[in-house]
Image (cartoon, rainbow, N blue to C red; front, side, top):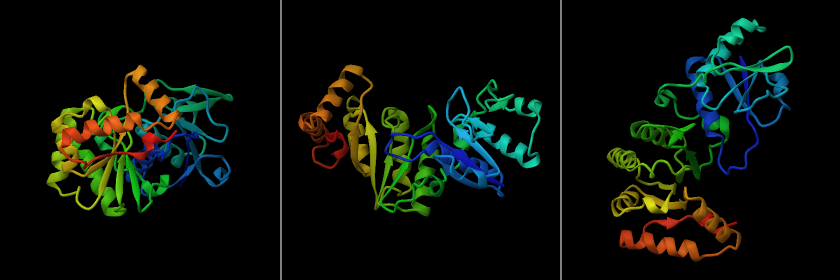
Length: 277
């Protein structure tokens, strides 16, 4: 069965990791699936089932059904249903929580999410599918749709990346890992214990006020050498955006001095991305 996942265009500078996890989940349960990722509908006629991934009130014209980014189970049930029947009945489609589908040409959204109680059951993202197979950098998230991966699961993701891709660096694109002190410390301990920090550089998004002396030492110990500064404070965020728009070095230099004082050396650098518009 040929499955095409339609994803909305994104301005993010990293691949659609949620779709990578969904595809890997389905392929782990249905070995006979051939999955592809489509930002447009150009190649969809060759697919047996086109599924739109995203949170919408409508349904893409080329898609048979849709699921939310957290809808791993909904996607799996839809794949199994359409594999058995080319034209399932409305009653069968209604039975899949969180599924979007059409009734008489109008979009219907079933109650529920079709999600997972435990996100750790998601396998590592299908990086070849989402185009995250650059030998220089790989991307990962510390959560899936707002639900945090456990430290053990995150370390397993790092291990999978290093085994199959072994890039020069790994970038954690959200700031929720270092923002959770207990989860971060356990992750750093497990990463160090398995030696997966050796020979690679990590990059992460971090809120400046979460960098304590202990966190700074842990960042350096497991090779988190590049940081993208973020903030949850709206006023501070506006100031950061203004600094970036002016291409100012002031905020970056100030934050770098703060980090250097905590570390006692210049081991971890602010990512260049902070300085660009």
